[in-house]
Amino acid sequence: MGQILFHLAFPVSDLEATKRFYVDGLGCALGRESPSAVTLELKGHQLVARLTKQALEPVSAQPVAHRAKSLRKRADE
Image (cartoon, rainbow, N blue to C red; front, side, top):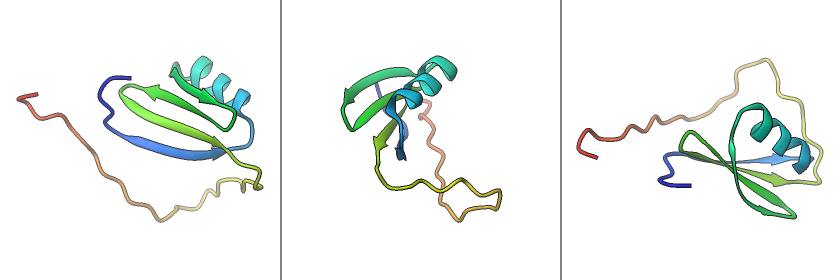
């Protein structure tokens, strides 16, 4: 997968549907797979979809408190 600039792990309820969406729909490269997770690459970033048996709540339209950090390559790299 090359140099990873960003890593995000998130829960999913269906790994096959997740692969179809991210690989076929968004064009992610498929990395490692296991019965409980898939690793995806999206433009240098690593996404890990982890299977959960817990009920997933729909995402609210309301803003969610979060932290974000933008990473950029230095000019000398």
